[in-house]
Length: 341
Ligand SMILES: NC(=O)CC[C@H](N)C(=O)O
Image (cartoon, rainbow, N blue to C red; front, side, top):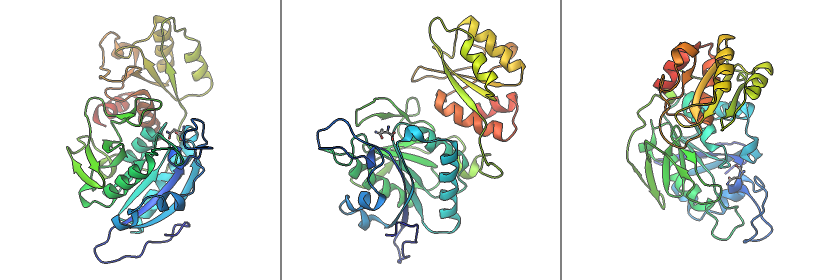
């Protein structure tokens, strides 16, 4: 193992897995095993690996600290850095798969970004923990064990970015965090699980049907930064104020976390239609945890110039819209992308 990104030795028949650590609760430290308060991202990647018995028997491992943050501090720049690192690791044939340790708050967004931009069939696996490394019954070690098993598994190739926690494998497109504290926090509403892992024995239930990685039309090529896209949360009595504020602050895209099937107050609808006329791309998603947002259901998207998010929740819709806008796509092409991806 080398902390500086050196290569794990190639041994006949042994898979090589690179761990890219970014922080989160899996690397969190508390004052005691039963202390609810803790600090994310304190334990270094070497210590994470050493804490898991048998991990090095699964694959030839090396580790690299890419960041050390709570994932509430993940941002566009870190996504671009992480994605570029994953791409370099694969392009230089330094590993057969990568495992990214990550905070659980935004792992669904990072995973989705990688699912769309990484150009490789090799497994990109993201994992984390709900309990800090120092907790009683910490969940991180087994999550990491299962994540390395998936990254080292030839059958994981071609399935895009996979989020592994609590014995479940989720497609990065579908997964979302559903509980603030429960170890069984991740769910994939609608499409369901991608597979399962039991002490490193991995099974797959399905292939992700939507284009990703090598089949995706998105990549890092020419992208130095991502355009500003804001998410606005709809509620009873919503006014137009925040829509107007976002537009005047320079948002190039807006995602509505709408009520129900992507609805919002009449005042908000009017402001969004005005924003769309000014060239801002507006996507209607929903604050509801499951179900699609379809076109022209209660609102006339055609007349208002709006895009329906289809199956993507607001935070996933934001990532896709950023990538679409970075490629210069206009409204109709953006709607096609939301149906396709
Ligand atoms: N369970 C967690 O990982 C949450 C810790 C922290 N907020 C993060 O996302 O990194």
